[in-house]
Image 1 (tube, helix red, strand yellow):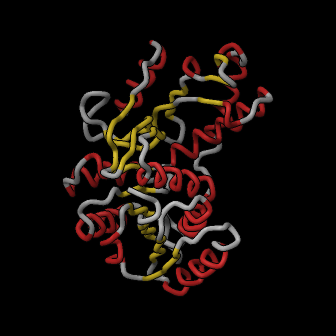
Image 2: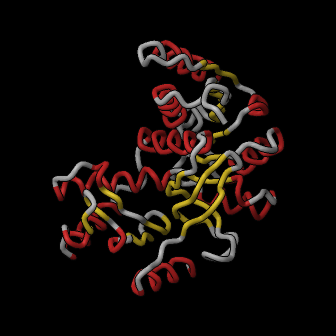
Image 3: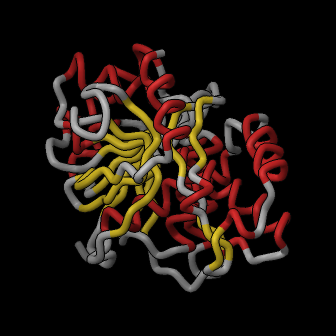
Length: 285
């Protein structure tokens, strides 16, 4: 799918939805971005603001707004963000109804969930709506992993872009940080940081959940770019187990390859014995 032809629909013009529209324009992801919300004046105002910013960003992305979720019918990727009136993410039964409506209106596009509290929604959509496992992914864990990269960069003096820290697990505090697999500027993480420093970083990260709207929007924009791009990349997302890597029907953060059909592959890393034991405990909860 070429960015020059792609259409991205954002359902919800709250803080995350508005920031996501701007992030997509900044990164030139999609020819058209549609911001949808029942609070049509809010959606229209934010769309206008982003549209006026596009020339400043040297982007020619078309930014539209509307109030009818039926506008997702022609989208190549749909992102559920947060509602303008309440500022709340799509959760619970209203969230499930919206997922159902989007899936019924557009039977092919991947559905990304940008909020921090939507792992439950992914599980219920599979169990109750019988959606294909590949169609749904939650992008918040990518923002969380980015925050840890920033902390490690501060602790080591490295650039955050040179830090890699894989993780699996569930919020707010059921995470397995794979320090054994982590690197800093190509060097093993364990060679740069002591056990005490690593534990301190983990404790700090627990207090940083959930990520803020700009971080969540940035993670969702990255996922959209990967879905619509010509190259396959992995990103840390909430995804459903398929019965191989972990229990079918359970949603958990893990590295996943994304493509135009959604989740193409889940990449459960090789866990050390301590990590395996902790993950087993998380999945029993």
